[in-house]
Image 1 (cartoon, helix red, strand yellow):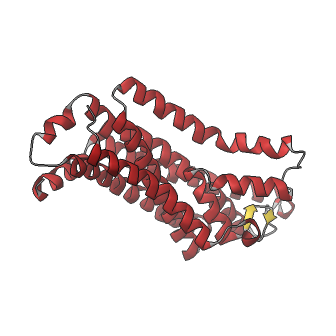
Image 2 (tube, rainbow, N blue to C red):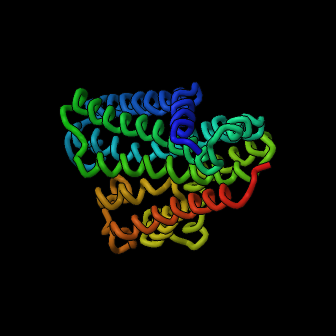
Image 3 (cartoon, helix red, strand yellow):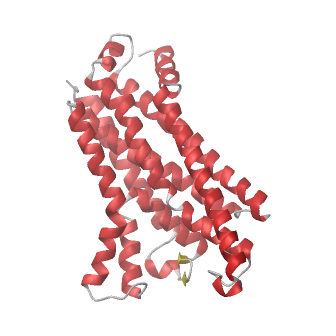
Length: 287
């Protein structure tokens, strides 16, 4: 493998239409949702008075709290678009033989796969980071206040982790799957699992007879966040804000939410699929 070929494929992937469209979609959708949320919160509170406050504060504090809560849904959007761009930029190119033609040049399979992985991750990280900073800018302009530095940094890292882990999982799966139709089916299945996960988990406390927002309900929900990379952002949210939800303050440590438990969770969800992907590149041909 030559450095020039690796750089060429990296540039080719990061500037491809699918990658650019995905990045623009992340930035645009998150920005529009934030504007809608902040304006809606301001209008609601202005029309209903202080009795309608979500956290007993001002319009500004309520808009910030609502925005912080809604930002935890961002990684789900990032993950969905990550699945699509992985399918287009890696899965489809592999099944159509495009990657094999690139391998005819002096570039290793490992170098090719990871150049694709890093280029897509770079684009997603730029888009999601820009989205978080844009959300902060929107808040400053609309309500005159901004997100805390800790929360902003936490969201940037959580968005990055969601993209990096889901992308690694999809690359590892697509590496061993030949049919593009099967890749599409697997992608849709994983998307459905991510989308339905909170609802499925919420059924467990009910089956155990626990009331909503009871200790058991919160414990089961938080434990489930460790089992889904798209829900990692919820752990970051709980650690920083100490809220399970807007009207439910908790002690994060009482539920196992520590900085070290988050680091361990992130290391597992990112390290395992990347390790599997690397092993596949070294030991297994994809044809």
